[in-house]
Length: 331
Image 1 (cartoon, helix red, strand yellow):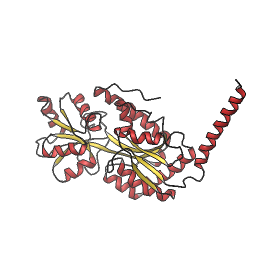
Image 2 (cartoon, rainbow, N blue to C red; image 1 turned 30 degrees about the horizontal axis):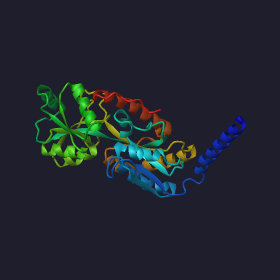
Image 3 (cartoon, helix red, strand yellow; image 1 turned 120 degrees about the horizontal axis):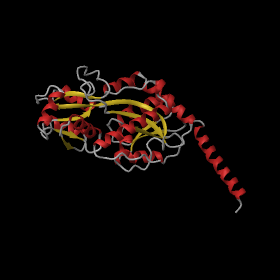
Image 4 (cartoon, rainbow, N blue to C red; image 1 turned 45 degrees about the horizontal axis):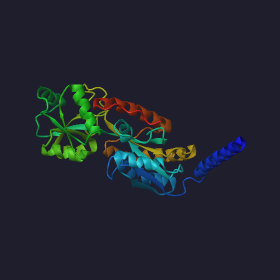
């Protein structure tokens, strides 16, 4: 066997691959960029992406289009981006499900190490606890006291196993020592509608779904499952204020690319991202959804990766409460 030839061939192949990646970065961008949203249109991942796309289009000088590739709690869309060329034209809009999934599903990738981090788009919105407005409970304590005194009397609608509302309800049962019943629905919208009709007493749902119902007087908010109160509801306390530590169930949305995306492309995208999310238009639209914008000085690939790792570990601890053994991320 001629090892010299093998070594030469390997070196040439490596150089060709390296030149290929370098070529991607030259004159970038020069054609349309695709934001792959792995969830349905109109959701809490899709809406920020659709507001962001035309703003980044203006900064980058090329079309930015949103593609919804749904399925398997986001795994289908993420896998599509994972397999894309590292040329900066196919990007993933990722979210909370990416760090929840691996604790409940067999995910064929590591949600952090197998992608190229770019930056965070938004934080939030938080889950909020709402009840039917005709119920007598005026505070969370009144609801919990009744639930503790009468096991299985109170039922919460959720959007199914391993979703944020179900995880939050399980954490509440674990912390309060109650036996609130989980009634799964096909989505958080259906669960919130069930609170309105009285089919269930309460639900954890995202602020965006809760606010129209509270404005209409159909439900009453008792607590915010986030790190701070919501400006539109200054009188509604957080779960932590009410004595439930580490009770933070907020979403987030970020932008990542396929593996081996060049630093030059990442830098170009990050600048356009930070400039866009700090525009008055974007901030106003996100505030209406209960979302906040990360500071530009902290919004960088390494910081986003560190945030995802912390969130992945936290979701693993929450998974234990639901009876799941946290899975080891794919290496």
